[in-house]
Length: 114
Length: 118
Image (cartoon, rainbow over all chains, first blue to last red; front, side):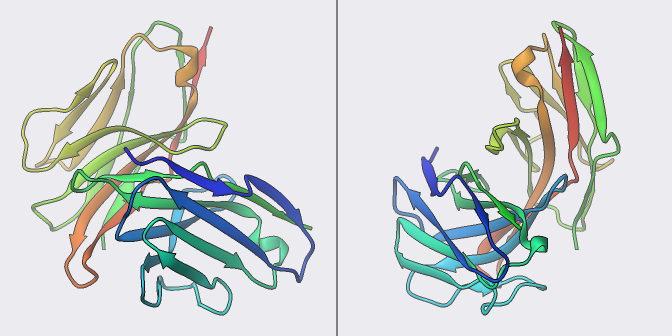
């Protein structure tokens, strides 16, 4: 399985500011995924990030709010922009494993917006 | 669109006992994958078990096993000899290949909170 790390592990941010979350994988992967998990809820896919192209966003998520970078095959960032308390969630990075149909997750970033 | 239903928001089990978590799904696909993920309080999503829909044999991983009923679209998880470390949220998930996007589409259930009681 892939080893995925995320920074920061948690943060408390002021309303109106932005936070960039980093995701690092120990092997090269084609696709990286960003998920949001609101308190007490399941996971919702925000976007899929391919290296060298624009991220593909799911319905309800836009690039202006959640810009994503994917500069190489082992790294991606997700920025949560102009934050409001409704953005308080766990944000998880994910990659597809070598075995078809598997997906592994990073440890998550717990974001609290005050 | 695929849906995944976990009808048990919370469950508890005595240590060393066996517990079964339910999951049903709805799809018109014939080829897909099913998963159970565990999320302990540390919030790390851990892959517990994986099932390929075209395989009739139920997947097993040590104390974890599934009962996959493809016709009934049912995918339950059995945890044997429950341990305190099994306390976590358990998410059932369905995955199919999205040929248009060139990737696999993963859909999660709402989760079941399992508490193992000493």
